[in-house]
Image 1 (cartoon, helix red, strand yellow):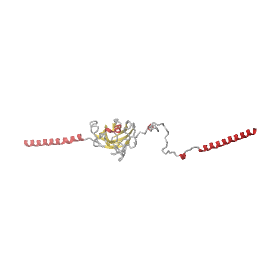
Image 2 (tube, rainbow, N blue to C red):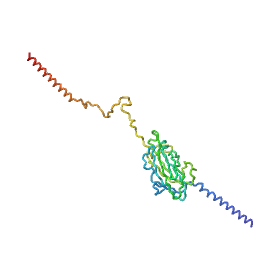
Image 3 (cartoon, rainbow, N blue to C red):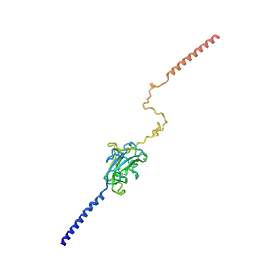
Amino acid sequence: MRIANRRASGIAIVVALSAMLGATPSSAAPASAATGVGVVEVSNDGVNFSRTYSAAVFDNIARLSPGDSQSETIYVRNSGTVAGYLRITMREVRYSDQHYGNALNLTTSTPAVAGTAKSISSANPCQVTYEGTIVAPGAIVPVVATLALGNLSGTDGQGATASLALRFALSDTTPGTLPATNCGGSGTSIPITPTSPGAAGGTATSGTLTGGIAVPAPAPSASAAPISGEASGAEVLPSLPSTFTLDPNTWRLYQEYLVLILVLAAVIGAGISWFAGRRSRKDTHDV
């Protein structure tokens, strides 16, 4: 009887230990593996939300000159059942000129925390632009995205273009513990600038560009045009039209004045001759 009880107790202990050992890994796995929580939806008006964005955030920008900036508000909603830290990453960056990529900056801010400007060239392959705000289920957070172009020297960035996107995600990872270039695998991506497949582009550190924002080429200076005759050291002369030709048949020699002079000379000569003849006849008569 005692032996049977001992066997039963031993079996119960083995079963209990097996259950504990089997349950420990399964309960610990979600805490260590989970990186994304909640469901992110976005909107441009704070009313109509979706997992997609209908158009580029800065779809009305035709030209962005050095020193200019534009800001737009993107509304983010947690449509899930779990709260998470808002994490925004810049990705899918393309630019045709390195100077332009260094000068073009993106900033994302919320009412609670002001973001820091990040150069688009720092996205390799992505770059965190904001993280930290806890978004509860059903909560809406307005995010202000600001695109600014810094100063460029001389012809740096002339005619350059760029395109990029932002991904909004909710994470259960403490902000600051992940590298800034950790892209993550979940979230909702929206285009920041429009792209134009087939448009001419160049190459850069982050890849090949097909369209986006363009830097205007500077207007030629009026002083750049050389004065006629200046390059060869000749005197400044009025420029002649390209169709200028010399045609003797078109010369104006004022022939009518020449004829008038001849007529006057004949009249004067006749008058002098008449006066001389009359005086000669008078002298003869007196003798």
